[in-house]
Structures are given as structure tokens and as C-alpha cells.
Image (cartoon, rainbow, N blue to C red; front, side, top):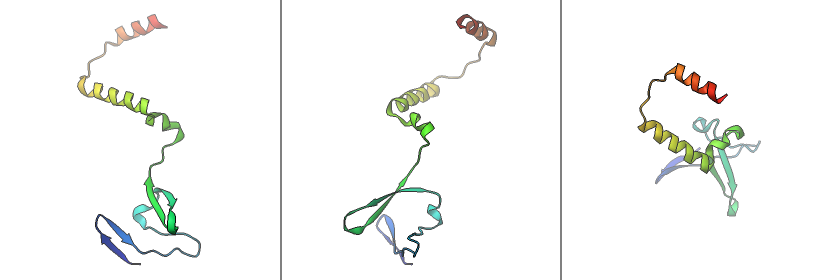
Length: 95
């Protein structure tokens, strides 16, 4: 297999095996790719990140903005000691 560097990336000549699989090397093992079939028979592979369905809410624009604001607040607000007795009393009034 031939590998050469052109500009920014690397170009590799690979042959698809009889099972229809293409090996990209260990560097890409376990990673996800979007496979796009483009005009002229070319195949474009785009690296992707997969977010579990149960965690997708954290990536919604509204939630990302809220998380960003919370992070900014945490960075500018120094931690303070908590009076546990006062907190328990306050929590008891809400119950």
C-alpha cells in the first residue's frame, strides 16, 4: 500500500478486500465515520462523534447555553462554606 503526503493531509492507496472491507489502520480503530457516496463513485469518510440518546439533551442549543452560563457563574463565584444546620432548617420549611 502506498502512502504519500499532499498539502494538509495524507493520501493512501488501499484495496478493498474480497469481504468488502477496507482497513484504515489502527489509528482509526473504534472510531465512527459517516460514509458518503458522492458523484463519480467516490466514497467520503467523515469522522463523527456519537452521543448516547440518554445524553442528547445536554447537546441541545438551549441546554448548551444554560450549561455555558452555569460554567461562567462557577468560574467567577468563589466557593463558600455551607451552614448545614441552616440549610436543613430551610429545607424542612419547603417540605
